[in-house]
Length: 358
Image (cartoon, rainbow, N blue to C red; front, side, top):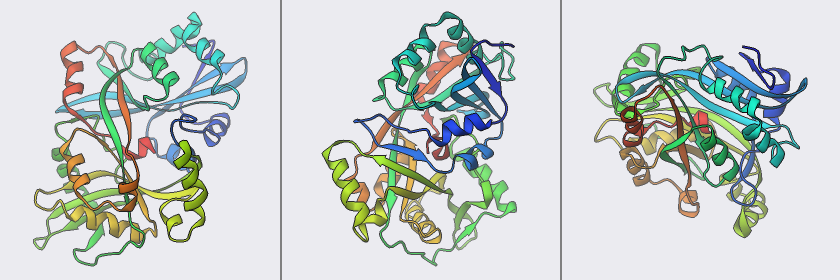
């Protein structure tokens, strides 16, 4: 389909990469402002992307990526699109006229609705599928724009930070990379562990042999997690306390291991544990920090789950005691769903991928 304002590509063009490499994430004065440092690597991992870009004549001024996936949703497999990298070129990002043009220009609005209806995303418009994204409700403009195009909040998520000033690699129990043979078993374990969740997918798991497990004396897997090294460039933190942290922590030895403007960390996801072995997660996380010579790990989880309660029962470290959790909304736009099917996404826990959020 030919569009006047939108351009669809199956790969990230140089113009798209330029926008994403310079994209500043966060809401000024309200939340942390930061930039991703490994955009190219993350884009290369997206299995089936659709980059939808906003054009002004021949000039690309904004872009958004629709990541096509098959997700498990409380026992039902459904096509879905995770929506990420919604960003504009500098000068357009906070421009009210840009926001008005997206929501107000009738032709552009119809083109956006056409994309959301799946007409250029390789799906049958008559089939059941959905879009989902993660939104900071404090970002009023983004939340308002999402609502206008039919996205609705279904769950809440929160960010947990696990940290150690001097992480130790505990040799007992032994932590190992999952083997190809064990991966089959781990997939079964994860499928069962998250069987009552929505939006569960393997797309961000088992990359680069970075899924790690702990086995008990009977050689059974009792805990596991995907670990992804990542890095942000932090530009600012909100409030007086934020300025204090930016100006002190980053210059004080030892403390700058926990917080630094060039913030290096692990993203942990695909967490698994066997009942009775929950405490092994703490050993697993700390050993992985030691392995990667890092001091912090980020975990993103539905805040109304047993998994959240288990994670909060661990010794998460100093930052957890000082830091206020960052909460957000899981939002969805449903295509060809009944009201009962939509309601299921509100009553069942959501699987939140750390790679998607970070």
